[in-house]
Image (tube, rainbow, N blue to C red; front, side, top):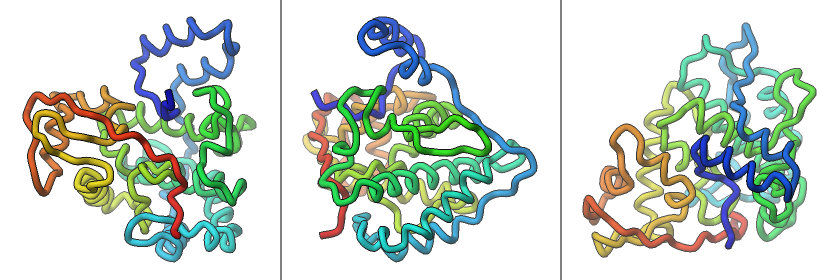
Length: 274
């Protein structure tokens, strides 16, 4: 079964799974995902995301598809932006929106950088192994955060940091882009704290109304993105449900309050402009 290495375990279920798999693959790599990650750096000010914004406007089209060859030509500019990101960690003096915008941009920019380092490639999954939480591309530690000697991976950013620190903000799943066709569209502008809520609302509405990702008929059994299957618990917090999420953002048909969704097979082909 092809399961995306962005997982939806509760803490208790994750610990149990780790214990069961311990003899098979070793403990260290799995156990890192049990611990929260929240690196901070005192005295920093919110990052200026303009350099990344310019690259996104230049190399991402209105459909969210990416000109990776163009990004490759501008790789030094992307690297310079990511150096700034690595050297300027957030702290609690930043607004929550500034912090979340920082981590969303960091995840998406580091994902692009990882693709570029293995480009050309037909799918980002080809850049790593097939053991989820062990050796996939999302488990490769190439990300520097501040002065920490330890390197981090994309799963660290999403699973240990974003989903936990911003617990309840399910819209992150419509903004994090893992370089696949079935991912949400890569926004062709950077996230910024001052406009983040509206940007996330735009992303959510765009994703739910994309017929390649969601078909909301019949009302009792809509066909929906596997993202809703990867993270079912994230859409059930604070009285929310999958049906409520779909109906909130749908511009067309509405689904029943009780649904039995069918999940559309994930297309892992690279989100590359043709």
